[in-house]
Length: 242
Image (cartoon, rainbow, N blue to C red; front, side):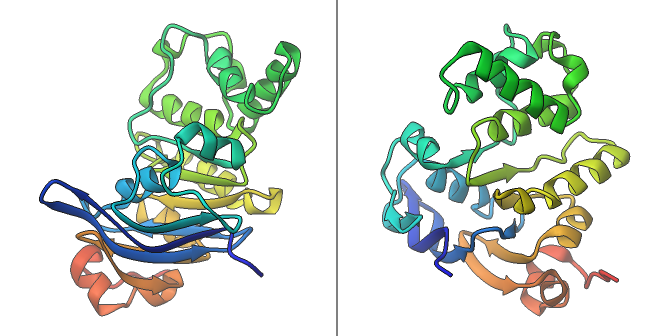
């Protein structure tokens, strides 16, 4: 099976800082890949490179076999890549459903079609009761769910989740984890950055660990929970995933 996403020897510098250093990894269709590492490790920069927010200084990014490095973010979205942001960025003056409809217009050309898709997506993430509320009225946890809804309303082949558990209660974390785990069965491949480790390590099928811009390990959650370099750089101690 051909990889859906290939990151080949990608680096990105900001003046004298090397934020991503010769990173390479692949994501297969239907995979749920976890991307973890300490704060400042380069995870969000990798997301921005894949999503077209910034271009790599060197290296190649392929999606569905086509090079996309240097493309504009809206062109990358059109071919099937969506992402959330660590800090939610809704249009606060609009209602919740209007925010999701804006994403839905990428695939739906009519107002009625966009509204139907937005309503279904809000129900998916448990926000259907808030559709008419202004986005500015939502709590941090609800804003995170709105971020997820906005990304999924674009009907992506690949979605990049950036710390979507932050601000959620333990009950909400459990529900969101179950929801994310079900996305590959619906044809949506996932790359997930998350600091709520028990959620991502119980859910991801494979994980990539980065530190100081470099990939330091790759494998299953069970393998990485006991990987000496991962424990030293990030976990602090071995994790029991039983």
